[in-house]
Image (tube, rainbow, N blue to C red):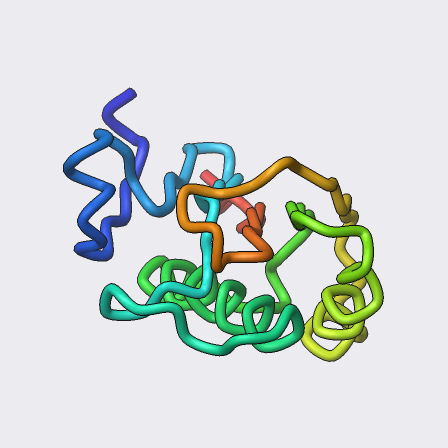
Length: 132
């Protein structure tokens, strides 16, 4: 799999848990690992809307390293800890992706490593393979 490109961002868990922030496959599919609203070791933004925007910004930063952007996103997943946050998380998603309209899922989970986090997002993007 030498044609696979991997992006790291220096987050402490990447080395501790052995993963990449994003992986680009030779077929043009880019998978971005779960992103939360942790920036420089601190939770950025308190409410569900703000945490969602910040989490997607972490994913966008990884995509930018591969010269991709929001318009290249084809699928998102949002994991939330409370059903009461559906509207705020959904509103943040709409504000970010209304013109893109990726396939998406929102899943309620029991919690995250840090109980102050209320949302984690995953992103998949696609780049057309260059013609040979």
